Image (cartoon, rainbow, N blue to C red; front, side, top):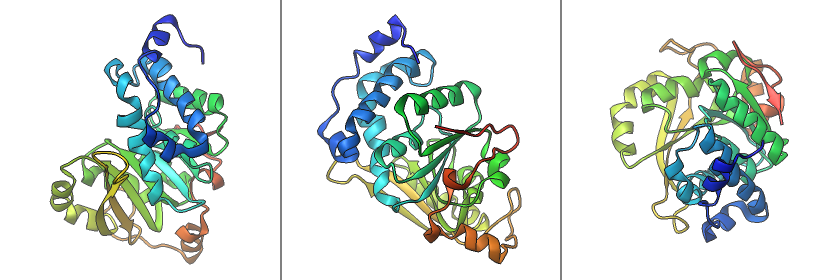
Length: 265
């Protein structure tokens, strides 16, 4: 992934990582720095990151996403829906090498960037799939955790993401200050789509200000995509999908769905 002269100029505006970054990434801070440089250069050139975002990439994007790691258990399988430039999926992969992460993104120019970033960063815990969530749902095992950032309103997001989670797994949706209003507005839809308990979590409190707001939805039952009724879950599938097994996400998947193109880093 070669940077052009214009991308080099963008990268010069990145600045040094803030103290919170060291707390989030620990001994992998240098790897996080390399990813930040990719976002500030090739990410800007390819239109994945706005040029005005470069000076605040650390605080607004990397650290903001990285604090979500505190909500994810060790060894979990994670599916990141609508990964874009890798937020939050690649950030979590950098911060947590124990996680098996599948990045799901429908746009070719974005998956090309993700593929190249995975290779440049040497991440062996990431797989990139090109496709929409509804296209790949039948080709991935139920994940322990499904993540999404600024993708859609909560009702649509739940409909896309929750089918990708194992029963008992969780959707972690990054939201803004209106999270409580969204939860109240879409509570019925979340329940109809198989969601159980819904909590609003604040990640990184005391580390970043404001903390990252995450809506956590536990998948209570399986609902067939496109249908608001419970579908049967076989004993074999339930056993395979148990969130305690830590076998979701990229670790067990070697196939893409629809137009999906799986690739391991």
